[in-house]
Length: 355
Ligand SMILES: Cc1ncc(COP(=O)(O)O)c(C=O)c1O
Image (cartoon, rainbow, N blue to C red; front, side, top):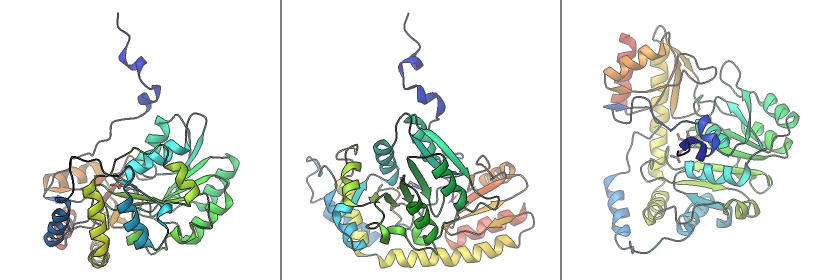
């Protein structure tokens, strides 16, 4: 008799689930994946595609996407051997975790945080040391530092600003965590462009244990092209490159990031519009009875309602797709949605007011 198929697989698979997005990925008003509501303008897409068709499609791209890495390094004003590009920052998370974790290793993850961190750590049979956020969803910096020390963790992963809480650590707090620990510290800055806080990037040369992760899927509106970057000192970067999937970024991704960075004023303008709308949306939400709003440092907002599941379903029936984040630690009856276009936010406000 054939063996049970599960016994042939990685035993860690029983601890993780297939990634899914509740409510799907289609809606009239889609606010559930923290995307930018502003697509790349047609003239720029045409310029990008115009470059792309001149490329040899039958030839592999570079092993690592050097053109894209150079473009981002130039944009940041740092050396290109400190930068690595990936097919979305999710891919980079796998690379960095593969380079850092394994059976017997300990990783500190604040809770709640981006779900992929725990998933990859479990897959690699590492031990997760969770540090709960404070009841208002702010980071508990002191507990992070203390726990990292007491548990002698090997790796700390922090999303700041954090998904799904929308809260940030200050620059000084990130520095303190990195300086006070011997662990590798991954600082996921997926939402940094929307934040009041300064990026920790400027300390990359003085903090040899820090890796900064960036995505081009949020402020840069490139979720559909899949581009992420890691930045660290060149010695560490050389090691992180070892488990990297070769050829994983396409020629299209390299051309796209180069062109978008050349036109960065589009991004700056989009971010200012989103922040302005966040303010307007926040004020409107605060005036709705039964809605508690958490202050946000990102392009998305968290609200608490009386019955998140029922509000989620009512919004869904009205064509508005948000994320029910109630399952996360400390986030009972919470919903998450990104700032959309003015008219989309208006529909959300009106529907929530009517509930
Ligand atoms: C904190 C955080 N990190 C990383 C990602 C992954 O982004 P991508 O793979 O699109 O670059 C997300 C996406 O939602 C996120 O919220």
